[in-house]
Length: 123
Image (cartoon, rainbow, N blue to C red; front, side):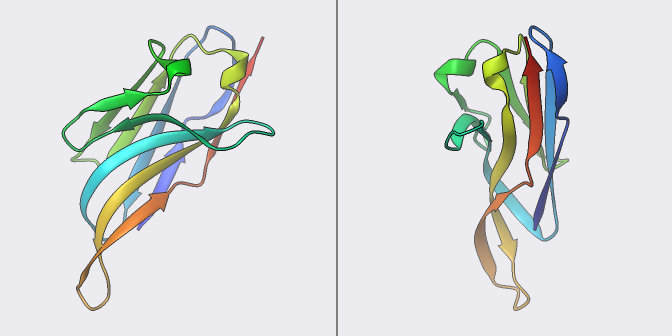
């Protein structure tokens, strides 16, 4: 199972970016999906999460500016980031709780991480 993130880049403050993260491999079911970020000299922190049913929660710092969504058919989670601020600069990581299958065809629960995508917001 792999998560492939994309969509990062360099933008000016006030602009928008959309991150995507797609799961591939032996995916039977995807439960919670989310985005985390790690800024320079900081610990990794939760940005937003979404359940399989579509319930969401956000970090206080991004409420009203960011929106998380998912397309279950495409096994993809998105993060729409609006009104970006310099303090949003970080490497963004996607995460998913995935039910997969091993070589013995047994179901296994995995916590998968994407490779990280850099978001840089200039003032």
